Every structure is written in C-alpha cells, then in structure tokens.
Length: 51
Image 1 (cartoon, one colour):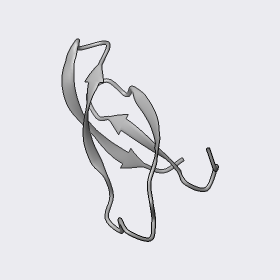
Image 2 (tube, one colour; image 1 turned 180 degrees about the vertical axis):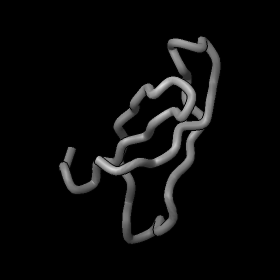
Image 3 (cartoon, one colour; image 1 turned 90 degrees about the vertical axis):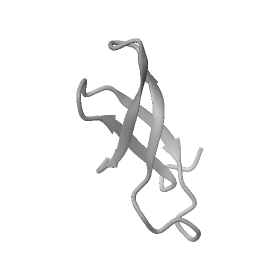
Image 4 (cartoon, helix red, strand yellow; image 1 turned 30 degrees about the horizontal axis):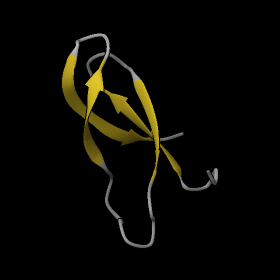
C-alpha cells in the first residue's frame, strides 16, 4: 500500500483507529465510514483524521 494514499479513520467515542486507502483524485471530501468498534461491540461512525 502506498503511504501517500493511506488515511486514518478515528472513532470519536473510543479513539479506535482504522487505516484505509482513498483515491484523492475522485474523493475530495473527508471520508466517514461505519466500521465495527471492538470496544463498543457495534458499528459506529469513523471519521477521517490527520496522520
């Protein structure tokens, strides 16, 4: 995975982190994805944050 395509997704409630890729040419806005939180044991919104 190219390091310049990596983005960090952070859960506001728990501070958990997911790493994923983003095509910066097509997607210009900040990404929000629903991912599984191991601490809360349910799906929550993870928002894009600085590396």
